[in-house]
Length: 116
Length: 113
Image 1 (cartoon, rainbow over the protein chains, first blue to last red):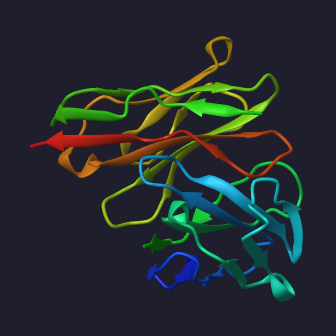
Image 2 (image 1 turned 90 degrees about the vertical axis):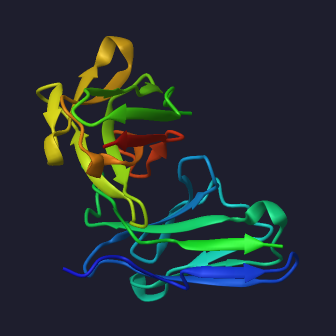
């Protein structure tokens, strides 16, 4: 079974530039998550989709971050404009269950963003 | 809001030593509990999980964890570590009915041969 795919793996940009990350979840997984992991910290949820609808974006800095999941499959996360504090690893995860209950999330390799 | 504390940030052990990593969470309701592991250069993988039933759960590679509800704890244990267990370990929680995970800050385990 193919895992969660993410690209690019690494990205270096200057502050105030924009950047986009792509995620392809495991086939058939209804729920998709984006997490931000700053060095020395655990992953923090940015946004959660169920199919192509947003379930939770309460921790997404909406003035600069946006995300979409068209057709309920792939997802993109965008930052515009980037700030120095956005330097982190951006993790995508997916899970099979569409309803409430038991949840095992499968993680992608992440995109390491460095903002200079 | 729920939170997770992992008090050991960096642990160094010799091979064959026993391991216990602490995890405490704050949430008053029913929770699901997880331990994830990230080996060097690899992505996060599920080590074990607790949803209900026997509070002692066994995971892959000889790991186990015990849920103690009265202490809001879910400590990870392994009787005898190996060099290949060198990794970062994350405890995570989600409230029943909510799928997103709240992670602790992680514990970096270094096993010396």
